View 1 (tube, rainbow, N blue to C red):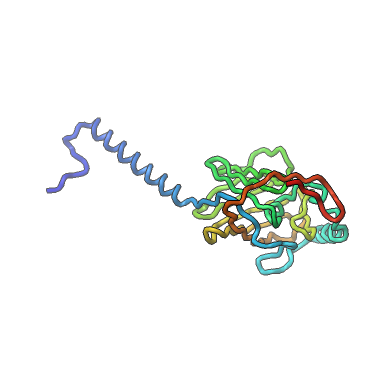
View 2: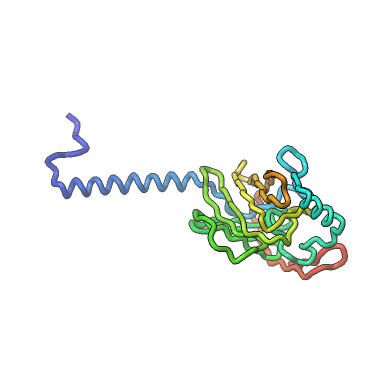
Length: 237
């Protein structure tokens, strides 16, 4: 007859040791499998193409309230007041959509960092925790995240209202709440499905889709904005 997994004649201490070793092995296997299931999105990324105006997933304009429409028309009538022309941080998602300004993702257990080349900005994302008391409102907001299988879910609040969401002047208030769902479409394509909610500016929540391309070998350089010059801004690289 084959040997039994549990030997009744085995001393109780030995049985407990065997059980502990087995439990440890199973636990380690589970951790290894969980780790292996977490995609590696680290490295340099850049928006796939220029985005002058965000649209909904159906290709339409974001649904604006009357107050939101008024703010939008005001921004569009004074496009030279674009905050980034005064070197203010672009905010989210605009900080990720600047052509020629890549960002690098650094993955860790407790934090995930997006090191933005634009004005050398860091975006710190706190992993596996709830939102906490914020020192904001802030340009990049406060971001917490967790993995849902192969999708990284980034929940951000605590934004100030000083940024535009896109080049066209799409506004938001301090009530802005974004939820990003990042997933690898392929080893060199990263998709960001981002949901916007801001009751004072948008009449309903809406979502947009961003796609980034991997930039192997690209280094995030020092980059400092020096201020308004004519029709644009000067950047020292």
